[in-house]
Image (cartoon, rainbow, N blue to C red; front, side, top):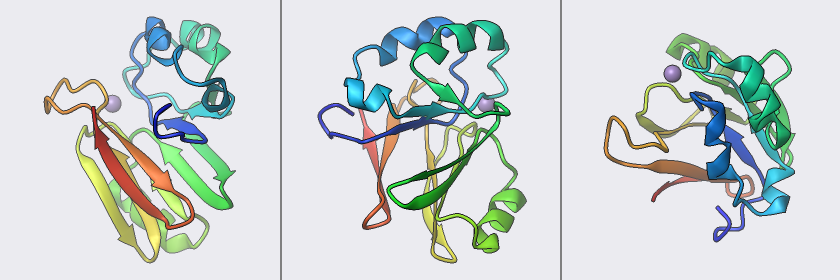
Length: 147
Ligand SMILES: [Mn+2]
């Protein structure tokens, strides 16, 4: 992410343990200042995630649904929305980008002109592929990067 000079980072949940903060410590300060996240179903340690990772990550106010504008685009991020929820949000006209996680499966598609992305899994536990996505808010295209 440092090499790619991203402007912001959104984590779609399931950090799992507060000590994963160490993986984010090396991010450029400018990225850390724009680091947002939601909790996932495996984030049981909310207190210490908030105290530890929360030093650099701004969690969604309700923990689960991040609504934010970046690069002039309205973004919704949640860990495990149902497909029908994603469809409804895409049809609503209220968002330009919809992000989710949980499935560990990559999604990079457009629906009604709305960019819908699931970056896969950074940990590579289930697919042996460690991936994240970079979204260009000008071209409105996402690139899945394997590390
Ligand atoms: Mn999950």
